[in-house]
Amino acid sequence: MKLKALSILCLFIVLQLSAQETKFIEVTGSAEMYVVPDEITFIIGIEEYWEEEFKNKKAKHYKTKVEISTIENQLLTDLNELGIVTDKVKSTEVGNYWRQRGKEFLISKRLEISLNGFSLINSIISKLDRKGIQYMRIGELKNKELSKYRKEVKKKALLAAKEKAAYLLETLDKKLGDVISITEINGDNYFWRSPSFAASNTLVESNDSQSADNEKKIKLRFEIKAKFEIQ
Image (cartoon, rainbow, N blue to C red):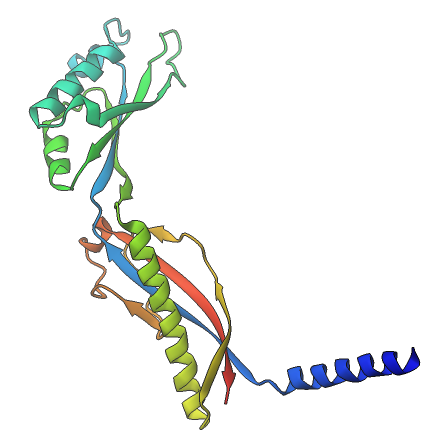
């Protein structure tokens, strides 16, 4: 039993020494890409209003309320004239969160419009009657092949990590060995806005200008941490 225990201890020490002898370098690589959306959600908030607000701003008492159904029907009519069918419009919120003292609640509603591109947005803004429109803004941007683009960006992030490790070791007259581990730092990381930085180990699939064009695209960005042996 003592001999067996001694053998196990010796084996453990050898393994520990082997592990300590392994030299490695650990780096982080990142990559990003701008993807043109093929589906855009445009959000319009509507709210009931009083006709007296627009006819006579000095009026102390408002009596004629324009119902939410009237505002919505006019909105749908205007959208249909632009070629946007009713099936592309859906209601997501209805509420009445505030009322003027002594007056009825003003019902509000949020509508989401599914568009294939940005070209119609200016037409929508120009066409709609501002009465009853509380706000308009761009919501979610989508692309049917987003999962494929994610894979591409992750691969490029890993290659960026490998390149970074290689040129750092070259400075020390060392060579890159086999990969020890690969860790994805951030998961599904995608958003749309202009880039705010550009790191030396970042591979960019678009021009670096913070243009309005990039603000209309989905930005994918991933970081990969990789550990390599040093030969």
